[in-house]
Length: 152
Picture 1 (tube, rainbow, N blue to C red):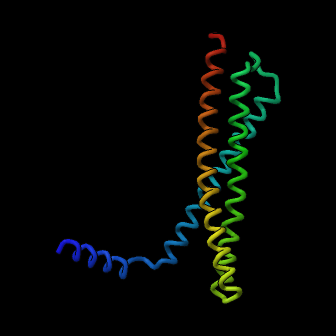
Picture 2 (spheres, one colour):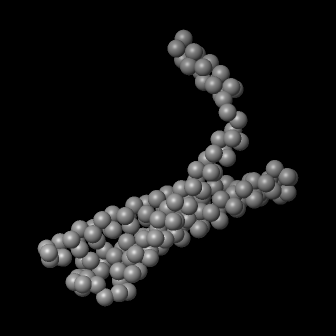
Picture 3 (cartoon, rainbow, N blue to C red):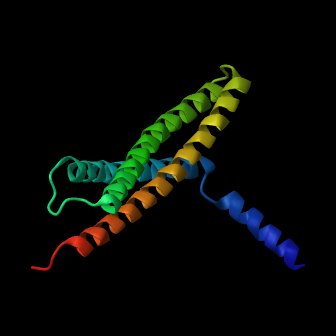
């Protein structure tokens, strides 16, 4: 009895809920915003870390600090790469979906859409993970610098 009520309620919610296209559009907007913010933060971080590696810093960077900055810089560059590729996959996804809806090469367009969707999801997760690795490396760099700077 409980199972049939749960199924009935689930069916009612599905019928009266927001149209699927609205949810797809919201998901796309959310994904694009995530790529934008991660790319903006990663771009700023790349500049900071490049500056730390290319200028004379007092006291000079030791081996651990230099390695940490390189890891942070590389992670932020990977975040940027994933952001750009994710935007491209998003465009590819919608182009192939439009081709499918318009009836142009339906089967091929649908397969391309699914492939682009997988790429889009993969780049989102890679961007998030690489950004978090870069952020952790940045925190480690600050910690290492604070440990070597003499107290005033």
